[in-house]
Length: 251
Ligand SMILES: C[S@@+](CC[C@H](N)C(=O)[O-])C[C@H]1O[C@@H](n2cnc3c(N)ncnc32)[C@H](O)[C@@H]1O
Image 1 (tube, rainbow, N blue to C red):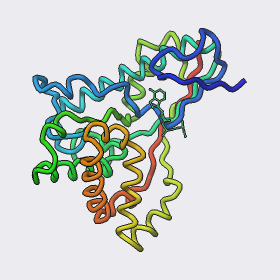
Image 2 (image 1 turned 90 degrees about the vertical axis):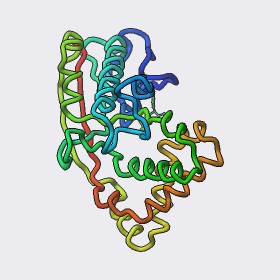
Image 3 (image 1 turned 135 degrees about the vertical axis):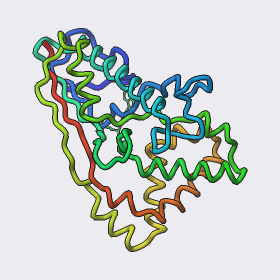
């Protein structure tokens, strides 16, 4: 019988030894929280003047995000291991990053370009005095799109070996479904393209940013982001979607 429940997948959701098959798609990039150190001005990982792990952020900031992902993903798998029957299967499809195409040791994380433009928009408004510096210093995205190595470190690590056998672990690259439409839209009309990007950001992270800034300042940020996105064609040029497909069997 198919079953879905409200609640966080970083907690217990089903009774013990209950599930024969578990499926989690395109959701594990949502961390349980922003890493504490990233928000702490006394920490070397403090992400001052930044919103995510983007070019120019400190290696300590990136490391803190990576640690949070490892902790969260382990927690997710621990809970599912208790809920699966022996021999039960868990499938995860995760938004992933690859380490190619980067000039630094930081992987260029998926959603990089949208997030970069959003950060630039925020910084511009701060420098123009329209948003407070503190609003930027105290906001970070609780997101992480892992590389294959980062997923492997968790699923093949000692902590979970007794509980799961890896049946499949694969990195796949696919064209985003509407990629051809994006190209047509962007080429035909920059303003419509900017609006399309804005809708993606509103949908994806708007509910995190709006309570932080308040409605009026959030709208200001969206407007600036829309103008930046309209002038930037990199998003649709890099329209490949990177996924990690994972199948685990409960021992
Ligand atoms: C991009 S949507 C994917 C939805 C669906 N699984 C699919 O593949 O179409 C990401 C989903 O993850 C959910 N999500 C985020 N954090 C979560 C958590 N801690 N526990 C459960 N669901 C979560 C969000 O509510 C959202 O519905």
